[in-house]
Image (tube, rainbow, N blue to C red):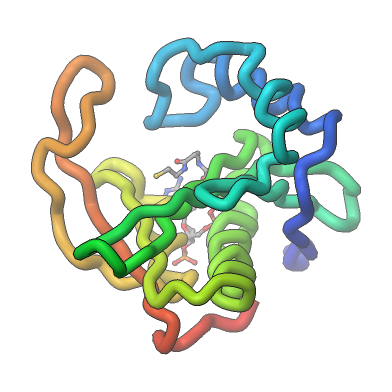
Length: 176
Ligand SMILES: CC(C)(COP(=O)(O)OP(=O)(O)OC[C@H]1O[C@@H](n2cnc3c(N)ncnc32)[C@H](O)[C@@H]1OP(=O)(O)O)[C@@H](O)C(=O)NCCC(=O)NCCS
């Protein structure tokens, strides 16, 4: 099957429907469902800065041939040791677009974007042992597994271990 061409683009108002779905449809996001979220929050955030803030943001993953958004990528700032600012990224694709080679490329493209436009040395991403698709996606996107973060996340009724991955500015970038 031919590879689907994708691009990252800013959020537009029509995309808020998808964000509301992820906030209100149990399980649509997959393993990371964390309960219902404020359905008005996407409109407020979009009005504030179009999801492009200094501390965090989102871009849509658009499938070029279809002209539709398959999902979105996100990033948020963190700091190690007071000065070591880094990004932690995330991704959610709609179920019908999963398993088609989009997720790993979208995350690699987001790294290229963040390394090009911000001076961070490190981009990290967390997932969990059950999420094989995300583990493989991160590895294909040039990330390396750093280790297990014990009991870092409360999800589905219990504290669970996480897996921490990172890609550094000088790590080899995969061809997308
Ligand atoms: C996780 C996610 C981003 C992966 O993106 P994707 O487009 O589905 O994955 P890709 O098609 O790019 O595949 C990347 C790799 O994962 C593998 N993979 C994809 N789906 C898989 C599945 N269900 N089980 C096992 N491996 C899978 C692919 O085979 C490929 O690896 P390979 O080339 O070594 O064979 C996507 O499935 C998704 O949005 N899931 C729901 C939200 C989520 O879990 N986000 C991450 C939170 S930590």
